[in-house]
Image 1 (spheres, rainbow, N blue to C red):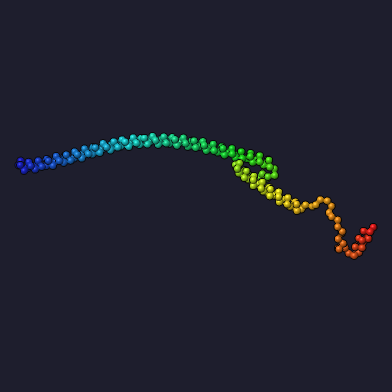
Image 2: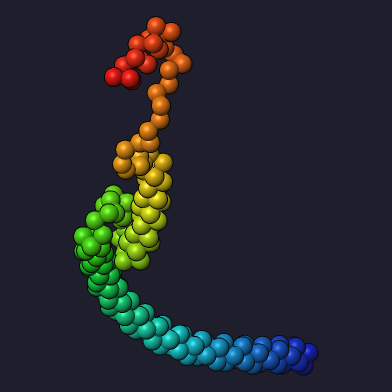
Length: 170
């Protein structure tokens, strides 16, 4: 082999060695990236596990709150039923104490509604009473005998007037 061939081979060997060094550097870099990615993946899996546990806990709390809300809803319905019943009894007691108020004019599902409708009914009854009293006053006939007046003889014929006059003398 000639010196030129040896020099060419040494150049190739140097280039190959440089390429090997470059490839080893790339491989080491990629191994480091892979290790970092595996570490990141492990951290993400831990985070996913924590989030899954938090999600399950939140779902359990949500289910408990849903049950609590259902119980509260039932309690509210029961209280509303009791309120309606109490308002009905209150209405009946008010109507019993005020017989002048027609029951059809007073309704309501709460005590406040019953009170408002009772006030309106009482105003209506007072207006009707006032109206009826004014009508009765206009139609009232005075007590006692009517005042005496002479009979109206203008519609009588002359012969009837004579008969009437003669009958008054006797």
